[in-house]
Image (cartoon, rainbow, N blue to C red; front, side, top):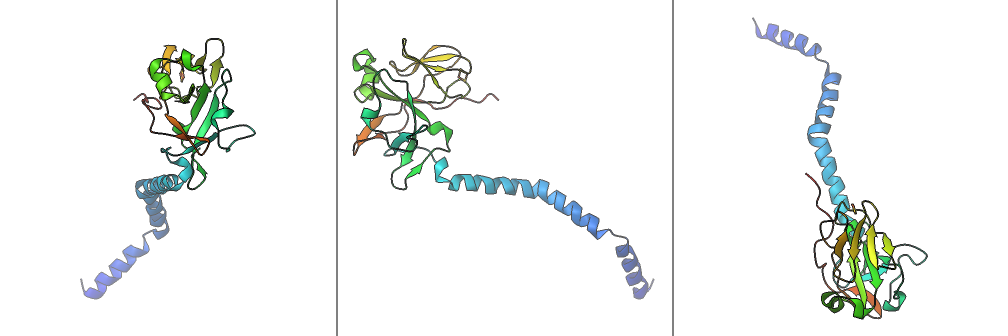
Length: 207
Ligand code: FES
């Protein structure tokens, strides 16, 4: 076969290739083998860039999470003995960013009579004011209920009971661990995070 014949055969073969089909396949392959992981990476990066999704840090102010005063800084006087626990979020005072898009930042503020607290809890409290993670250690629901007469925090999902007078210990239900305590201090008249959580926050996902 001459060179001219070879070139002619190649041209004929290339004419039979469906380039549009190849492009479509290449696109689909790209999406599934390269495109989707790349998309995930972009989404993760976006998440990391959103300061509202960052973890609380010592020095953050506490602000009301819900209600008419949502976003406002909380003073120790805002929380009284005998009232229902108040949900709060940490706010980065330097940037005024409320870190509300990271669920494990959500905490509960409760004021109890100091003389009714266990020794360790009293030492961590601000004149009876204590702060706990609001995420149940069972499967992560909000610990949203309060039984006034027994002064217990309750997770309504599967009825776990926690004792805020004694380090957030489990006193009933399936929760495996106490609620983590958040140490507080007063800065410029407002409640602020003094240090990291004492104890583990959140729950263990089943494998
Ligand atoms: S998630 Fe709270 S008791 Fe199950």
